[in-house]
Image 1 (tube, rainbow, N blue to C red):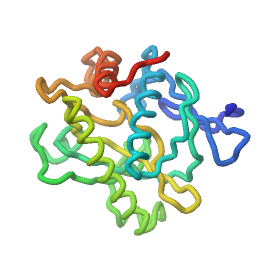
Image 2 (cartoon, helix red, strand yellow):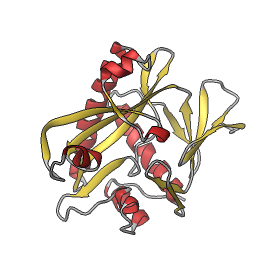
Image 3 (cartoon, rainbow, N blue to C red):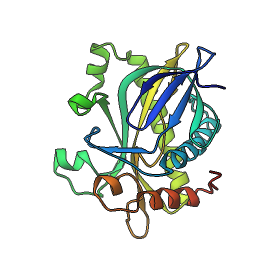
Image 4 (spheres, rainbow, N blue to C red):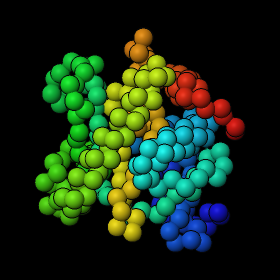
Amino acid sequence: MIALELLYQGKAKSAYVTEDHDLLVLRFRDDTSAFDGEIIEKLSEKGAINNQFNALIMNKLAENGIPTHFVERLSATDMLVKRLDMIPVECVVRNKAAGSIVRRLGIEKGMAFDQPLFELFFKNDNLHDPMVSEHHVEAFGWATRHEISRMYELTLEANTILRDMFDQAGLDLVDFKLEFGRFYGEIVLGDEFSPDNCRLWDKVTGESKDKDRFRQNLGGVLEAYRDVAGRLGIVFDN
């Protein structure tokens, strides 16, 4: 499949139209951002790492019955996806306390929740992705009550699948975000799953293996991403 024309450019990926209206090419770039794009750097090979990482996760979820936009990986940095009507809401699952919830509620970092905590955020960098309720999502017409329920269901299913997978790799899946869209009326998982949009901690040392290494200027970002990928059995071909 040939990428014909740039459709849009996000902070770390670019989308291109193809000759098939229902399909897009997503290109993972080496750009790495934090704090809603206030800090941006290029990390060599990051795009290829995340593309291959994402392909593994999307295939794992699809094998377990979760509909995704992923079709196939085309090259080191490109993947073919279904063209979704994206819902401007981020679905966040938290298994342990980290990041914004610690700042918002003053709770202890690392506190484990008895049940996974589900939160919704309006996807808008200019507003710093404010937290919203399902009533906001429905009232503003971003998604129907049925669609919200489906996103909730799929997000928690993904959490069960991925939490177990990372546990076997010696990692705690602390939290992550998912984005969904519509494909001919069906709610489908879109965007990506990579260390860019989740938190992964080593179960023994507690060391961060995700983009917090970039946010907190800890260094070793790509080394951490590669370590996680290696634990999952990914052999890089780029």
